[in-house]
Every structure is written in structure tokens, then in C-alpha cells.
Length: 579
Image (cartoon, rainbow, N blue to C red; front, side, top):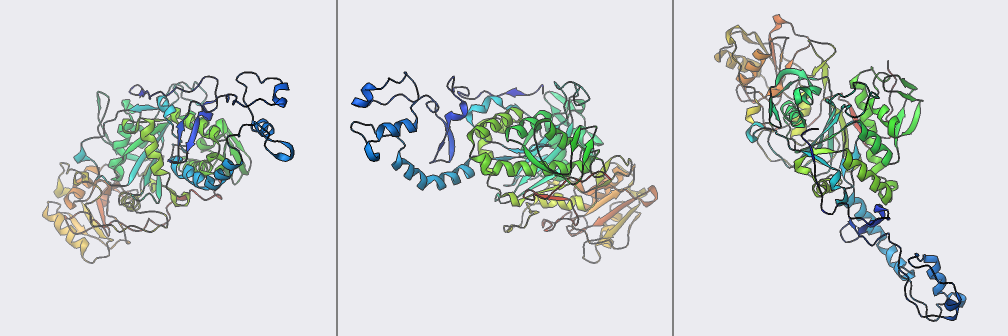
């Protein structure tokens, strides 16, 4: 990206020539982290020893030749295994080995807890071992995300926006659209709970129609759009990751802390560095678009085949983006398991290759644009147990204006967003006691009232809150604010969150109604089954406190029924053939 730059680390390339850099990173048992030791991996100098008759007659060892443990043992042993006269004690001998065995379990635990960081990457995903040596690899971008008062409330939870761009810059014609600057092709909102006991990973479909706010990329001010495909929040008209960041905050009401962005090459290099990722197909797959040819069953994929797996969509499920998302979630889950496995954690060479590939693949915000900051983030995230990581997708319906696009599913989408904003887990973990707090979205997230002819707006208010009389009270309140045609309709099914839906072409009217009731911007959504004669329909949810009172502070405690889920520890997930 033009606005990116490379950070330069301190002594980042100070490893010893001729020595494998992976051998120079040694585990410090006191801290559980790796440190750079420039003497590690060098040929060991010959230890001085008193000459013996045997040693005087032996051929001298070439200068600088490394002495092996076997040779040291032989030199130190006398008849019957006793130490010979004048022999030098061997460093790392039996006493040291006994001491090493006694502390090995503690070191392994520190290694696992102190060194593994979980950072998901769009379309592939991964965990990054961070060393100071890799500081030069990281690209960082300064982004503008708006005034503090315009953003959702900050919390102690951690929210990372992971963007997989479909940029083809520098990739030639291999993946089509040669030279395309790239849009937000795969986007994940990675929510880590306040107590770091669980995580929710929310996939945002690229074809979802959303409002894209005004944003700034570098010195360029880019106007927003009231209705646009989500993936155009990046790349379109020069939009940078800060524009996608603002779009997701406006859409979900969730405060984002950092972003990470990768391209196609990251999938190939990361999957190769970890030694391949196991995936599963329930039937044979042959996709001429992604070039994936896979027989039914389990496979270990890396490089080009891994990229083909996460890109395939024409030969799985319903053949679209919504059925590609679970494949990506399957891949990421498997990647997480592989990186947390002892096969990876106990292999310094593999960890080195993985860290090198990961840091080269990343573009991040300048708040985490150094290895030390990424390391702190990684150590924090690594505490999450794999079984408590849940992948899900934004609940959607076909867009009422264009069947090739998607719209938020009323109530369900808002309910899921509210759970994430309130740090409610989708996995079965003990919930922390939550003291009453301000709403997760700021007051400014309520839509500003557009200038509409309120007297001519037809509004039907339906009650799904479970509290009797709410619809009538809300309709009366709307009438008092100029919406003379507002009426109370039949009760609706129970809803956790309120929704204001509208037919095509009536978004401004819906926003005006929501503003009059004090509902947030996320409550306003297109209605797929509404016609112009239906007007605006309001469904009051359990979060509604009263006419003009907006949403209550108590968040929903349960996820919407039948939402799509993948658990990171589920090894039985398989891709299904297209229907």
C-alpha cells in the first residue's frame, strides 16, 4: 500500500554469518521467552585438557572443529566407564541432564504459554511467534478512525479487525484481475473476552450491503455511501483499512482496537511454514475457478493448494461466498490447532520459518507496528483455550433490492452484535459479573434525524419485547413527534433487540423513525418482504426501555437461534459439495 512503511528494528539483522538464525534464538527458562544468543550455533572451541599418552598419540583436531558429545564422553571415560586421568568434565553431562529433566516440564509449560500468540488472518489464519529479529518485516499504516465521541465505547475486551484483501498487485494473471488494488474480500472481527477465556470470530460477508461512512486515507477525504457492498470499504476510491475499520464499528457498535491485513501470498507462505494444514472434504471437489481438485476425505494442504481451498466457492455448498466462509473457518481452526501442537511448539526451525512468513505477510496499524508490541499482543491472546474459540457469520438475508447481494437479518444481526459488544461468549464458559454500564454504542450511533415529511410516513409498531403495551406507547410517542400515521400493529415474535425495517427507497424515513425512538443506527435495516404500501415497520425488542428511551443497558445473554457456528477444536468439520 502506498501509505505503508517499513519499521526498522533494533539490531534486527545482527545474527552471525554462516550460522542458522533459528539456532541463535534460545529459550530463557526464567521468562519463558526466546532471546538472541549470538554465540549459540557457533562451533564450540576445543576445551583445554591435560595431555595423556593416548591424547599425545592421537591426531590433532582441526582448529575450530566442533566437539561432539559422543567424542567428549569417549575422551572422559576410562576402563569400565571410569573417567580417565586428566580428562576434562563435559559440560551438559549426566548431572546437567538430570537437572534438565527435572525442569523440562516447567520449561515446556513456559514455552507454550509464553511464546505462542494467536492472531487470525483473513482466509487463512495463524499464530505468530514474534522475535525482535523480524521487526524489519512488518509493514505499518497510520489510519484515521474518527473522533472519540463518534466511536463505540471502549472496553477491556480486545477486538482485532483482520482483513484479507484480494489485491493482485504483483501477482500477474495467475489469480485474475491483474493489478487489482484489492477490496475487503474476507473480513473477520476477532473478539477476545476481557478475561481472555474465550473468543468469538465474526465473519462479515463481502456482498453485504452496508452504509460506508466518510473516511480519510492519508490526506484524501473520501465521501461515504449510504448503501454499498461491504468489500468496497477497502480499495474503492482509495479507501484504506481505516475506512473498513470505521465501517465495521458503525455496522456492529463494537469498538475495534487494531487491524491486521494480508493478501493471497500469506495463505501460501504461512501454510507452508507450519508444515501444512489438515482440511476435510465430504465429497470430491473440482473447482475450475480456484483450481482446487480434491477427493473426499482428509488432506494436508499448503502453498497453492491451501490458497485454492480457502478461495473455492463454486464447488461447495450453494456455490457462493456464504458457503466459502465455513471453509475458511475450517482452515483457520485447523491452523490454530497445528500451531498449538507440540509438533510446532518444540520445533525452533519451524517456529522461525513461521514467524518470518507471518511478519512479512502482515500490514498492521501503527499502534502495533513493532515486534515488541505484537509480542505483547500475542502473549495476551495465547491464553485462550482452542475449545473456547467460536467462529460465526453475520446473520443475513437476501437483499430486497438485489438478490445477488445480502442484507442484515433484522433482530438476529443486532442481537449478535450486542452480545459481542457486551463481551458475551458464544461458548459455554462462566460469565463474569457485569456491573451496569453505559450502552456499548455511543449516543452518537443513533441516526441523525433526516429531513423527512413525518406526517406522511406510514409506521407500524409491533411489540416483541414481552412487556405489554409497549407498541401502543411507542406509536403514541411517534405521533407526538409528528408521525401522524404511526399505529400499533399485532404482536411480533419475541425479539432480543429492536429493529426498524423499511422498503426500498425509504431508508431516510426509517432513520427518522429510529431517531425519534432513540434507537441506534444498527437497528435500521432494509426489509426484504416490505413493499411501499407497508411503510416503515418497527419491532420492539427486549432491549427497549420505553418510547424515546432507546435501548436498555442489559445486553442479550443468548445468541440468535440457528446461527452458523464452527468450533476451533472441532476436527470433524468437512466441506460439502455444491448443490
